[in-house]
Length: 85
Image (spheres, helix red, strand yellow):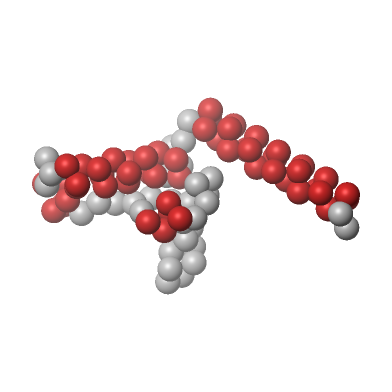
């Protein structure tokens, strides 16, 4: 979770071993049994949020917002390259 928080929020983090994008995080059974612990519940909530964003089941609204943000950044980048070659 720390890798994702220090990286880009718009993209899934990459595996440190194979460098492929991580699209789904699966919590272990022990952490699921300890859900009543506030620290464990916080981490499980972050895992659920990550999976919701990048697990392939994202809502159309999130995908549209992500696409628009990336499109705007691309246009700004292209414009700056034209102004300052």
